[in-house]
Amino acid sequence: MLAGGVFVLGLIGGRDPRRLQGGGAGPRRDHGRLTNIHDDGAAFKQAYPDLDLDRLEDNLVRIVTAFHDDLGDPRSTGALAAIDELNATFLEMDRIGVPATYNLPAPR
View 1: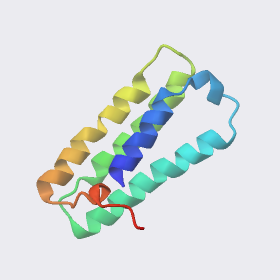
View 2: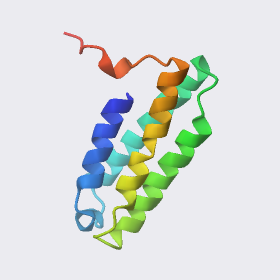
View 3: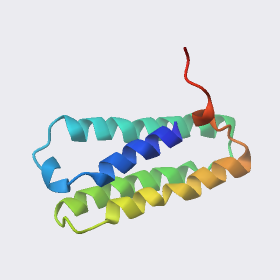
C-alpha cells in the first residue's frame, strides 16, 4: 500500500507541473492514489490504534496544497518535500508493528 503509494507520489512530484494545469485524467488519478493511501491508513488505524492518522491526513493535505502551489512556480519542490514527510508515518508504522504488506509477493 504505502510503498506503492510513495512510488506513485514520486511520479506525481516528478512531473512538469505546467503540463497538469489543464486538468485531465492525471489529476483525477492522483486524487485516487492519495485517497487510497488515506483509506489504507484508516484501515491500519483500526487494527493499530497507536497509528497517528491525524499526522497522515495532515501530510496528505500538505502534499495536495504544495502540489497546487508548485503549479505556479516550476522551480518549486514543495510537493516533493511534503511527500518526503510521509517517512515519519512509515517509521511509525514499523515501530508499532504494522505489517509491511508492500513486501508480499504479487498473486499469481
